[in-house]
Amino acid sequence: MATPVTPPRGMRDFLPADKASREHALAVIRHSFTAHGFDEIETPVMEDSARLHSGLGGDNEKLSFAVMKRGLKPTDVAAAAESGDLLALADLGLRFDLTVPLARFYATHRSELPTVFRSIQIAPVWRAERPQKGRYRQFVQCDIDIIGEAGMLAEIELITATSAALDALGLTGCSIRINDRRILAALLAHWNVPADLSERALITIDKLDKIGVDGVVAELGSLGLVTAGIAETLTALGDAGWDAAEPVAPAWLDQDAYGDLLALRAAMPGVRLDFDPTLVRGMGYYTGTIFEISHPTLGYSLGGGGRYDGMIGRFLGTDVPACGFSIGFERIVDLLGADAASVETSVVLVYDKGTDPARLVALKQTLVAEGLRVRLEQRTKNVKALLERAAAGGYGRYAFVAAATEDVAALDFRPLAG
Image (cartoon, rainbow, N blue to C red):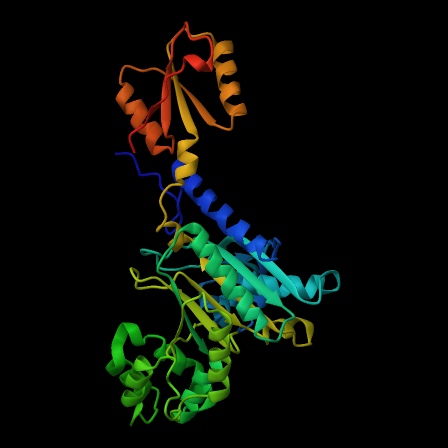
């Protein structure tokens, strides 16, 4: 029995129709970002291993694919195994996101870039995930970032541009959940969480929608924290909205950060922003505002981002303000249908055996010059199956070409069934 031939686990092939849909969505996103003044860059798929494991990537660092050094010897492998430091065998790694490469890019090219740099990165990244619905080991991210702008103008531009891209894609009903790391820090202080347990506590809070209030309280208790009053606070967090400080601000709320969020909301009346003090974002590099895209039919986010003012300073030695927003392309493209305009302008010419090739090419060139996408298919006994494949491939109309067909005026185009 033949062994199935499949892509690596967690990675996918894309048939022509799928690829066309993906490219259409990417073009819409790219056009929208460019219209808002962002410039596209490209970085290598690999970065130095030490850079990828510098403590800035949160749990994603554990999911990084390492690339082994050249010329390794058995003694090198044995020494790494004995020390328990298997990363000593690697000098490079596949990028697990586009933010760490961007920080390195900016540190490399700072003198060639404007004071405030607005970047686009649209590219694949790799994580050693456990594959499941909506999670892959290779996937595309669509990032926009603003480096050098310390004020809320950066957040406003990023959220506005991302919302415009979602609208251009035809995704309705999306909202953006927003919080601030300063509010989370105030929450942990309210619970007397020691600094060395802060990140672990935030990871636990991030599970609130999965394990509920009781689960979060139990897990925080397992860290050795005093959990009295935490359940009540978590319930209040879940009910909090833009009136969270009325009539009196609760003890867990950082009022300066909350005031900044209110100002952001007022600056973007056309964007639905939902205040969510339980929003954490797992990446360790966030320092201020954080946000995620929500959709009413999904239990997971369609993208997210936030402010990461401390990252670039790790490479430059000088702090540079930075903020970014990433669209989770794989999840978004699954919600989109085929590009209707592309289907309408894609046609198939089904020709009889013996038709003059020169005449076929002439017909095709005439239609292509009119802006159509044209495929030539020789007529088969099972014409129905041929037309079904064409429809599945993203073609919208077809016409038969007989040996006597002289020009395109003689073609009778008919719709292909979807």
